[in-house]
Image 1 (tube, rainbow, N blue to C red):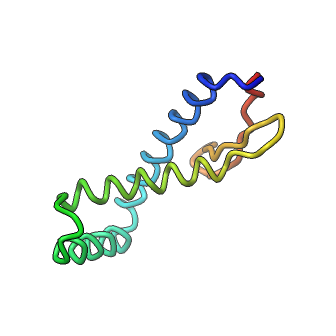
Image 2: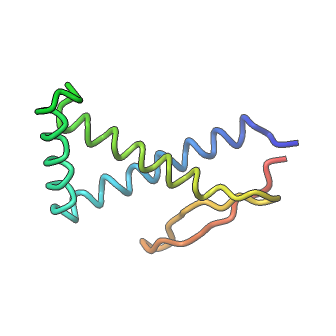
Length: 98
């Protein structure tokens, strides 16, 4: 049987790590942040959001991180998470959640 509490805690930790990585990438790739700010302006001007640009971008980063982690979960006896080793994206396999 799956240990749901442990799985949830591990997935939440992975989301936090991916969020941090994505925020760091915004600092390295100013064109991405510029595009996100333009998307925010369009949404703000169309009154689809009242959030500040920083809040809106933060929400987009969280959505992307959650999508990445959920897409990384494989059926079967092991779960696959995006990870980092020496700054290079790698795949790390977590233990079985039983």
